[in-house]
Amino acid sequence: MNYDMLLVRFGEFTLKGRNRGRFERAALSRVKELLRDYPQAKLNHEFGRLYVVLNGEPYEQMIDTLQKVFGIASISPVKVAPLDIDEIAATATALIGEIAPAAGTTFKVHARRVWKEFPHSSQEMNHLIGSPVLRAFPALKVDVRHPQLELRVEVRQQGAYVFSEVIPATGGFPLGTNGKAMLLLSGGIDSPVAAWSSMRRGLEVECVHFYSYPYTSELAKEKVIDLAKVLAGYAGRIKLHLVPFTDIQTSFTRTGQDNLIITLMRRSMLRIATKLAEREGALALVTGDSLGQVASQTLSSMNVIGRATELPMLRPLVMMDKNDIIDIAQKIGTYELSILPYEDCCTLFVPKSPSTNPNLLVVERIEASLRELPAMIDQAVEATETLVLEANGKVWGRRREDSVVREEYF
Ligand code: ATP
Ligand code: MG
Image (spheres, protein in one colour):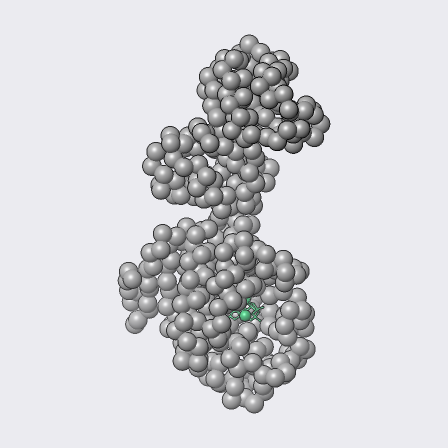
């Protein structure tokens, strides 16, 4: 179809009073980044809305891209007509012709005169545009209450915008407008969905992944990097901290407390993630926990595990059904990667009967008996590698060696 422009509407944050400008600027800068791939397109920002003038760029592809931007509520492809009622009616007729509605489709015109100097009122326009459209398409039936096809016309000083489709987008808050959190990213289904859900609330997310080389393979690490790349497609770029966890994990296996291993591991993960969060200025930890899903996600386990950190624990999926989580994973493009079979460090040493009701005092006593644990936690933080993954596929690496940070480009 032959459209001139995309009309982009912002989401719920437009209700947020004084913050609105900041939120709009954040969404705008993400849109600008994405539109670099469409050099002919021109962006106009008017109070509460964005207009993307297409200048021949492929609108369907651009809609797909813009639909992913957090903070955008909906998008309409628009035809622009000169400010003349006959021209507007002709454009409207052409648009309906391209939509080619089935016989019997119910229809109405909804015109708005935003530019008050236009000589026809909204009511008059409904008539003056509706009549020629109905003459051209006599099989349409008028229904002013619940039409299947609503032809919208907005008359502004710059021109008359004619459109009918309102394509829903992701909504939420623009990325980074609600602060930063550290997300524990495993290779599973849940944590990437937790990441996306957090980003949709305006949280900037850095990811931390724990691996137990050589017990977990290089492929398992690659898988997590690939998942983070998908997330970078939404965020523009994602920082991924890769933490060597083998020593800590094996020290727990030596305690002989098999049923508490997962609890102990999770608490150490939280301690390391907390240190990284403090270093990076993140104010909360996020996990993919969902209540009752597995032993480490009973309320009792969450209670004992969560006490290992003083940061707020955010669990966006905590009350969600697995099926709904899978639906989101499929929609955001992480599902197929998540179900690849590589071992995660937690599935590796999973005991036959992990405790669903761990005792905090017992857990604390075991930790206290592991004298070297605090030092191992510090070492793990020191040995953490950080990658920066960009939406365009570039990967930047950062290694800490003797407190010198080296930047590398892979
Ligand atoms: P997921 O699908 O996210 O792996 P899960 O249902 O398999 O979740 P668990 O394996 O019990 O659940 O993990 C619970 C949460 O702990 C994960 O959602 C994730 O946030 C965190 N987590 C588990 N393993 C790791 C890991 N190796 N690295 C980083 N985070 C992890
Ligand atoms: Mg898992």
